[in-house]
Amino acid sequence: MTSQYSQLLRRHDVPGPRYTSYPTVPYWSATPSPEAWLESLASPPGNDRGAGAAIYVHVPFCEALCTYCGCNTRITRNRSLAPPYVDVVLAEWEMYRRRLSPANDLPLAELHLGGGTPTYLEPIDLGRLVGGILSGVRIAKDAELSIEADPRVTRREHLEVLRQHGFTRLSLGIQDFDPAVQKAVNRTQSEDLVSKVVEQARELGFTGVNFDLIYGLPFQTETSIRETLAAVSRLGPDRIAFYGYAHVPWIKPWQRTFTEEDLPVGEAKRNLYDIGRDLLADCGFHEVGMDHFAVESDPLLKAAREGSLHRNFMGYTPRSVFPLVGLGVSSIGDSWRSFAQNEKAVEPYSQRVLAGELPIIRGHVLTEEDLVLRRHILNVMTRYATRWNTPELRTPFLESAHSRLAGLAGDGIVELQSDGCTVTPLGRAFLRNVCMALDARLARKDPGERVFSRAV
Ligand SMILES: C[S@@+](CC[C@H](N)C(=O)[O-])C[C@H]1O[C@@H](n2cnc3c(N)ncnc32)[C@H](O)[C@@H]1O
Ligand code: SF4
Image 1 (cartoon, rainbow, N blue to C red):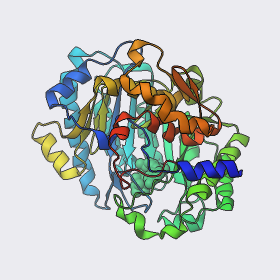
Image 2: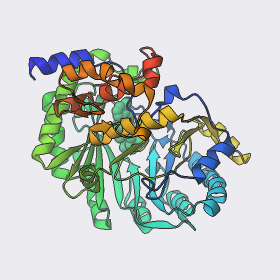
Image 3: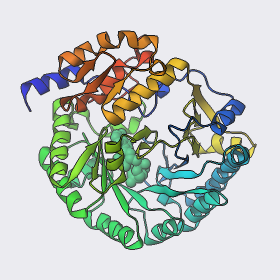
Image 4: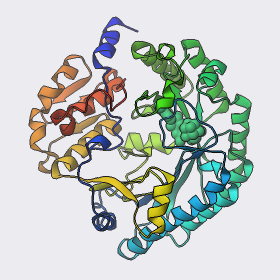
C-alpha cells in the first residue's frame, strides 16, 4: 500500500451511509399515510425506468446468531412461529394485490426473499409463501427470482421447491472459511458443506450463484483472506458481494462479543479488500459498483457496462424495477417518490396485518430536491459518474457541489466537470465519501458519530 493511499484512507475513513437509498433512513422525515403510500405505488415513475415491479419478502428467522450480524433477525429454534408468519405475509400481500392490480398492470420483474434466513422455513412453508405471492401475478418474461440462503440449513428439498416456482438465483452466506474467524463469529461451515449446496443448486438448474463474503471480521489476516478466496474460486460462484464489516455495536450489541482489538480496521481492513479484489480479478471477476464482483456472463456485469445497473435496499440489481413492494417485518418499499418501512418485530407486525392495517412504522415522501439528489447518488454508486447538465437534474444545493467535492478532487478521488463529477479508479474505494458530498441532508444536519458505520 503506497503512503499516499494510506493517507487517503486515514483522511476519509469517517462514518457514512451505505446509500442503499437517498435520503438515507436516519433522515426520513415525512411518513406517507397508508392511502398516500398505496397511491404512490400505483403510479410508478415514467418509462425511463420501471421494467416491472419488484417484491422483497423478509423472513427474519435464524437458528443461531452470527455475532457480526447487522440484519433484522429473530433467532429461535422454535419452528412453530414460521407457518403463521407465512400466513401473515400472504395476508399483507393480499392488501397490496387488491389495491395494485386494477390500476397497475406492470409485470413482476423481480422477487427476492431475504432475511434472516428464508430457508429456515420448511420447504412446504417456503412453497406456500412463494406460490401464494406468485399466484395470479403476471410475471415478466425475463423475471429474476432470487433467495438468500444459509448453506447450513438449506436442503435439496428447499432448492427443488424454489426451482418449481421459477427461482434461478441463489445467494449463499459464506463470510469467511477460516476456522478461527468462524469460531469468533459463531458461524462454522466447511467448504464441503457449501460445495454440496452449490452442486445441488447447479444440478437443479440455478443459473446464478452468489456468495456473500465479509472483510474486516475479527482475526482475519492477509493469509486467511487468501485462503478463503482460494476456496471461493474452487467453488465457482458467478457473483460475489464482498462487504465491509459494518461495526455498529451501539445498535447491534452482540457485536461486542469479540474485542475491538481483534478487528482489522482502517488501512488493515482496506488492505484485506484490496487483496480480495486482486485475487478475484485473477479468477475472472470484475468489480461492479461498490463491494460487488461478477463473472463475464453475469447479467450484473452486462448491466454495469450498459449503464442500466440499479441499487436499492436489496443491493445491486441489473435494472430499475419500480415499484418495489416490501413484505414482512422491517421490509422497505420504494415507489421512487416515497419509501415505507414495516414494523420490525414479528408480533406488532402480525397484529397490525391481522387487524387489516398496513404495518408501516416509518417512511419518507421525497421532496423535489431529494428526487434530484437521489438520481445523482444512484449514478455515483452505479456508474462512478454523474452530470447535472439538464434543468431536471439541477437543484440549488448542487451550485455548491464543487466546493464540497474540492477536497476529494485534490486527493485524486474525483475529477470535476463544469456540470458533474467522475470517480477515478483510485476513488472507487471512497464511493461513499463522494455520495456524502452530494447529500444535502447530511450537509445540513450532522447525525453524530453513532449512526453510520465507517465509510472505508
Ligand atoms: C440475510 S444474510 C444472508 C443469508 C443467511 N442469513 C446467511 O447468513 O447465510 C445477508 C448478508 O448480510 C451480510 N452481513 C450481515 N451483517 C453484516 C455486517 N455487520 N456487516 C457487513 N455485512 C453483513 C452477510 O454477508 C450476510 O450474508
Ligand atoms: S448472518 Fe444470516 S444466519 Fe447469521 S444471524 Fe445474520 S441473518 Fe442470521
